Length: 415
Image 1: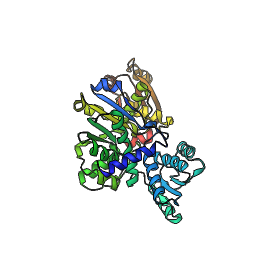
Image 2: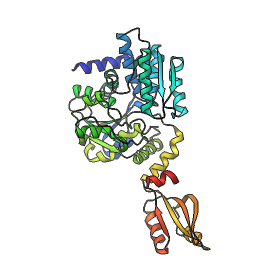
Image 3: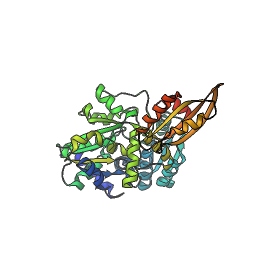
Image 4: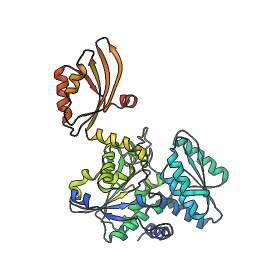
């Protein structure tokens, strides 16, 4: 067994001072659908509802062991890492200063304060995370505190490896495949380093959001790549640049092992797990389940572990998630309709709608000409095929329209 694996086991034992192992649950619904033995490693059920507590605790523990006088820790985060650091600070009785962007939702600030209590102070600075990160590091140097990276830290990676230790202990036999979500790479680096050392027959797949595929870019380039643009919807995994230390652990990964999950499709997975299984997952927490359809032919008859990395979902986002899921499934579309300004034109249009079609949005934009007016209209239906029948009727009747459902620029301004 490697030295890393031994340290990961020690980190796992130390974690028992905070919480019991998170459940490894066989999911009958997914197992039946894919004719496989599918297990969910429920990291959404830690005390802070994500695996981030593991790395923060282990790093803090080891720093304290090496330097008992170090009683001040600093991090920059607007999400799960902040909550993990806050929880660990309260546990160790040390001071924590947590930097968050000024745009951080109050709900996340309040949760972090709940976990940290009097042990932490939150500083809101910077409109963008890069500004927040720079301010936190400058402050850390000024007060001689210890900076806790969310993933680019050897002790953090070692702490995240405890997920792999628990999987093997709980399953009792090596899984055929482990599916891991990827953001900065700390979880993937830790879990794979442990399992490759203890169960070399286990295979892996890695999942990134389509709009934040920094690991795939790095693996294909053979070096770290900074993405020029990141879609922030999957906020727990939308990282512009993979961590350097995690990447050094993952140089063996082939590009074909990395799968990309479209943000709108992730929404369908989140809703299905909520409605069918009663499991609340944040977007990043749903990544490992979201790619199962792509792997259906490869996993049949095999034992598969999906790591559900977090459940910090703000239900105020639920309407957005439903909207994106409907659009991905082809059940909701938006049009700009050029409506003739004559008696009966609206009634004629409404008569074209089928029994399963419903108007979700109707907004008269402006009178663009004496004889025509523009209408923004959103339509929901129960079957995607219903739109073909509607559009055929519009064309036959000579109505002019434009489908803007996938037009990102117009959707941003109008929808």
